[in-house]
Length: 100
Image (cartoon, rainbow, N blue to C red; front, side, top):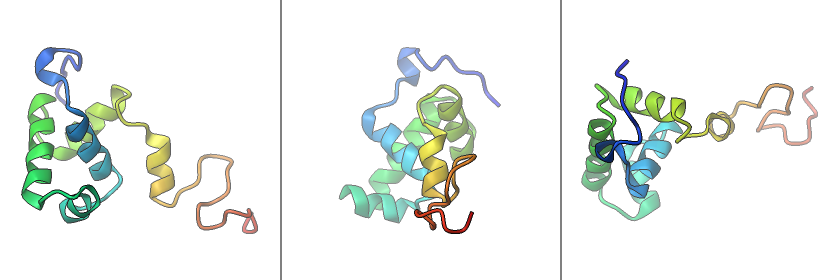
């Protein structure tokens, strides 16, 4: 995995680029992100491509991992969005804890 100085000017992600990267990390498709943000699919893909480039990553997956490691994306909400409970917590699909 590439090493990148996430605080260098070329690596500074815009709020929109980071938002698109976060949504991608949650498993959302470009179409879903576009609909949610009121953008075209082309614009979403451009933001994603710019984030990958700024982070000097070889793929969207690598860009997401670099952002997670740098603390730009919090993995706990991602686990919740994927239907997984935090360690020791109730499942998202079981908010009352009845399955424990």
